[in-house]
Image 1 (cartoon, rainbow, N blue to C red):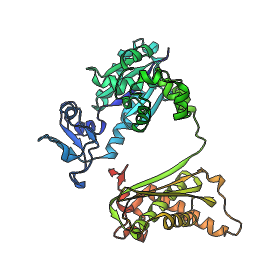
Image 2: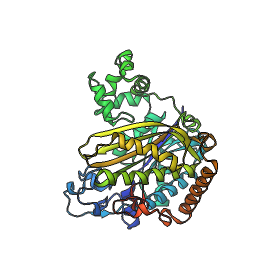
Image 3: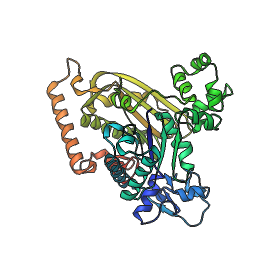
Image 4: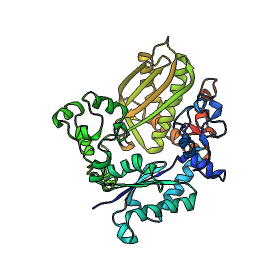
Length: 413
């Protein structure tokens, strides 16, 4: 029988900040948040100690009633370094083909063959992983163990974090015995608030009710996803890490979203759109990709949304060809009377640059010149930083690209 681990770092960002200060992550009251954004800013992470005192994860600073706690400004570069070091620890124990990195602080591992190799049981191997990570990085870890990927993830999310040794195991029988009646149902992996609300229409509030619901009715409501929901309700999952590693997407896309620091007027938002499109075009150049369809989404201060898509008459990554399509979409869908709070752009039908295509009347020498210039800009950005070469529009009052170039994942380095 297969055995899987899901290894998760406890309150990762907060734990890193504690370790950097020489403090115990399990005994320190610390939150990761940027005070410069005001008391309404969302806390990116809260230390386990603060959670034990009743502070909710993802709360806002002003909601914390404790008097004495440390506020740490996010350092994304440091978190990435710690994540890489933790991955290095895992590579000393397991082959990379058996590891699937799920997020910056979580990964799946197929440990089936390693139980015999290390000649220990699954619980001792899990403790070996936790100890190795703690010794090398100081970060406390949690391990969910399961006979398939779903059960390992559920063991982590619902069970392991409540155990003193931060380890929990589930097989199909234990799942049905202990978690069939667990509520809320959205605690289970891959059941979002939206899905749980749709299930509630059928009086399905736990996995037992889902497992015994009429499958035909379930399929009418959820389509192909009904099979996954039904299997998970019985604790079943056929996908393996080998399947994940060998999976190839049929279609690709690239996207960029920006929440503006304040409500923007039409013209200022148009300036930001220019920066975003150019930046994503350069990203495609960097990755040697081209696209044929553009998408634009405008979110207003009053919570309303406008969106539209357009298939281009070219397949390229050159800004001069791409931006006119975004410009037309922006003029077509954007309400000039409303303040804008968020802009989202994306490219779909993304292909290798070998598939680039222009119209017959386009000047090939001018295209070659623009491609050479774009590649040079990418080279300079990669070598010296994105702020080493800026356009005049990036220096305008309401431009955002210069500041965003200093961020990682939307946060300070």
